[in-house]
Image (cartoon, rainbow, N blue to C red; front, side):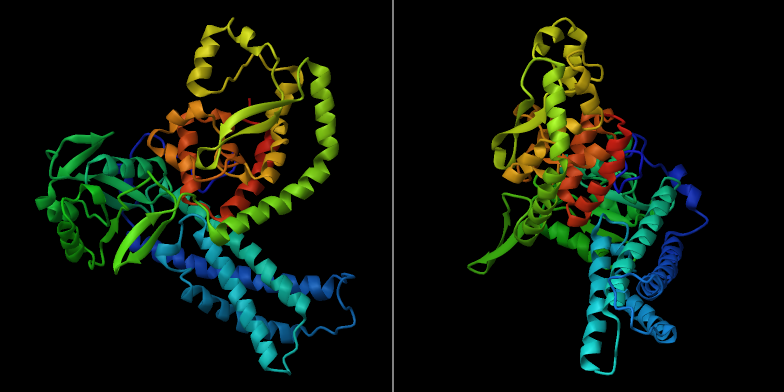
Length: 503
């Protein structure tokens, strides 16, 4: 993100071709995954052992005043304990699915599972100490071992993921995929998979009964055959991922037939779309009415514990942030007032949850006669209408350019967070007029609060196209976890300091 690598690097317009994929032909996909999992095991062992040793060093060798220094450490005891805990950790990781192909390289779920697994291990150690009275263990060591374990294991797996993403660009860890259904839903699925080079899918084409084989359906993707030719297509192209666009299947019986035929094939993964793919990204709930299971759509993306955790993070970080930044806010307000005539704050009318509009606060960075100035530059006015941004904006004040470069003009939005209209991390706030830019995805924006920072902020800011901003927002909404929020908050700092792409 920004100049750092993100979980969600964009794919260029070139589709991975058969020739591109052939670069990895000397190593089968199964062998690649076995090498990856073996590497993860080795790295997990090294990082876990390193975390335990680091906890011992901090607790017993650094003479930190917080700890009871009268405790006599026994390195032999802790070494034996480490040698027992490392295989215990690996066992827990295995049970939790951290070495399962399905749980790797997929967003932040892997990191969440990692955190839960480490916490489970520590609870087992605490329980053992409770049941065995003679088992004495420094509580500070245990707490630091838990903390360092997560940090080091997270970094280890993060590095491995970056290497895999690098290799995917070169044709490794790529699964040949075919989409059944060339209707709107099938095209949307293809669009999303082609836009992310880290997806691991090499979309080869479509299978559709209504399209003549050989016809170009989307970009350079062709219809490879009809439904009766599906078996031949799968064999000819050695397909490993069969994606069914639910709305394109003529009947439920046909979908069941496809699953019966290929769902138990160890060489093919059959995946069903929801039928509402990308149109509605809120959670789906299944309830029974008169013993009939019916699917309901949540009006908001985050509910229950997820909403509580995100709100807790917003409050716990924003209140101290406002207190610490108060002197800076005061200085900026004075500079804005001294620099040009007009109010200190600019109120931008934007759209929030459920379509409710509110005023997002920003320090004023433009002259109050900006509209008259823009009339003198018709080409810039046209660019503004197209992108809702201007790189060389003649309306910007002297202090305004500096504030925008380092995103200091957005600091008053912390008060919007406290009010509940915004969140620290979320999709980019937009006006009602910009909703049309989101086309079929506009409903999703109404399910979450806009954020001060987000994927768009750390992935190039204003340098990326508006279409890419839309995709980033949709990715965030679909894949939100508290770990993704933490990651984006951390990556916002270097992105803002470098000041690239902001205007």
